Every structure is written in C-alpha cells, then in structure tokens.
Length: 72
Image (cartoon, rainbow, N blue to C red; front, side, top):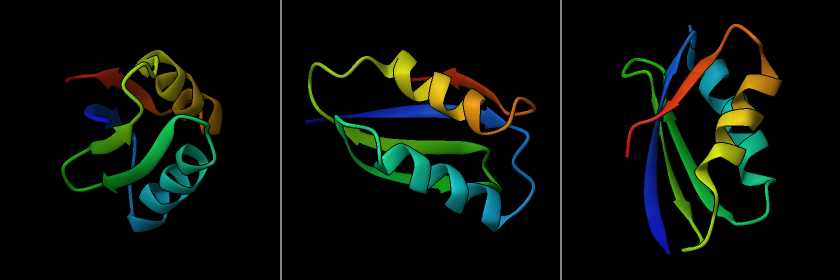
C-alpha cells in the first residue's frame, strides 16, 4: 500500500470533498480517500501498482470544473 496526493481546484465546500471521496472509494485499488476542500487536496491510500491517473480521471468525470493534478 502507498499514499498519493492529488491537488484539486474547484472544490467549494465539504460536500464537494465528500462526493469525491465516495466516488474514489468505489474504485478498485483505492483503499481510502480523504479530501480537504480548504486545502484543495485529496490523500489516497492505494495498492502499490495503482495507476494514479485513474483517480485523476474519476475526479474529472465527477465535475468537469474540477482540475485534478497528481502531486505525490
């Protein structure tokens, strides 16, 4: 297991973070998601071989105004 961090522009409230967390936690290979709209980031615990671009694409699919970028 490893941790990745994704910067997300466009989250405006706690509900935005909760929506993203729920969608990401439904993706195979992601064990947990913790989004913080105030910091504009989401920390993920994922399988070692997980492709982080999948999480970025899921975030973009939730709302096209979200801009997700892998930071770690």
